[in-house]
Image (cartoon, rainbow, N blue to C red; front, side, top):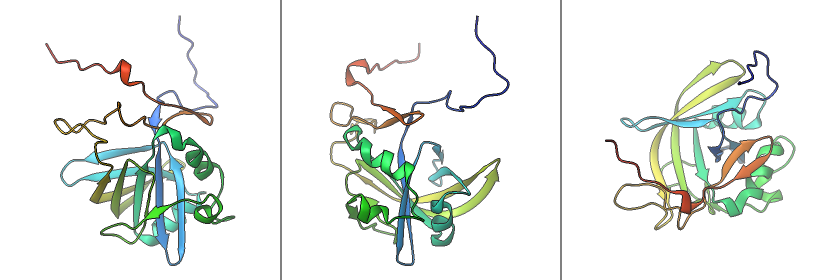
Length: 187
């Protein structure tokens, strides 16, 4: 029999999720944060959303920059995710403190992480409040991807080359095993 909860302390029953390192530049300030609550929202136009608490410094930076990037790191860069998620950009310069290597974006002014296997450049088009988080919606204007990170025929992540960083909640991380890959065709 399954246990039914109507009050819960943890809200992570839908994990694992890939980690997006979301960042923006406003003035001279560059800030990044780890985000598990993100999703593509539309193919045409290409829209990407990320939920950010009003308490986060990234909320302020992205709101003012009117743009953001989302960088996806391989599992071997798990420490960067933990650092970006547990320290506030209000208190420290995360790029300098954690020696984060950046690459310039091609269309917007906010940088991406050099170590990412894929990254999105997004122009902010909307912000809506949902409970204790705001949904930032960006139109994807450019995609950066590491060579051979995706299978050319179908655009799926090449798990023989890339071990994606997945978040389980409560500061726990995992990755996918390429040996478990199954291609299931509908009957």
